[in-house]
Each structure stands twice: as structure tokens, then as C-alpha cells.
Image 1 (cartoon, one colour):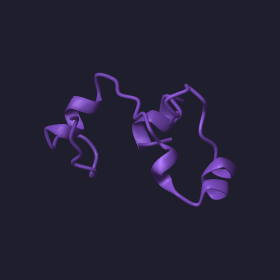
Image 2 (image 1 turned 30 degrees about the vertical axis):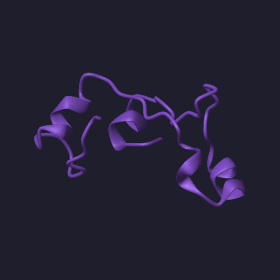
Image 3 (image 1 turned 90 degrees about the horizontal axis):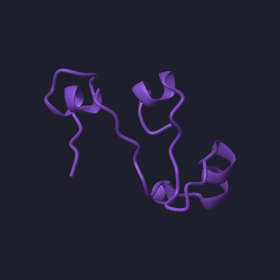
Image 4 (image 1 turned 90 degrees about the vertical axis):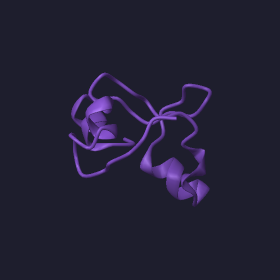
Length: 60
């Protein structure tokens, strides 16, 4: 999962081929660069506005 909210909603991190990324795949790649597509939902805008979790991320 690429964020705590996505984990609670069971929305996995995915590659651009829509493949679910597992811990095993991350360890095999030895890089976070395989996370090519971050899943977003309406709650993400709370985080980008600084009103969500502590991540204070941004959507670009």
C-alpha cells in the first residue's frame, strides 16, 4: 500500500500494468521505483491540504 488510508480501504499500490505490488516484489526489485502508479481517492485531497494524515503529500 502506498499510504495508510489506502491500506484501510484495501487499495494496493500498482505497477503501470495494473499488477498488485507485494512485499516480495519490492524485496526482489530492491527498489521502490516499481511503484509506478499511486492510487488516489477523494480523501487524498485532505492530505494535500495538510488536513489529513502526517504525510502532507501532494498530487501532481
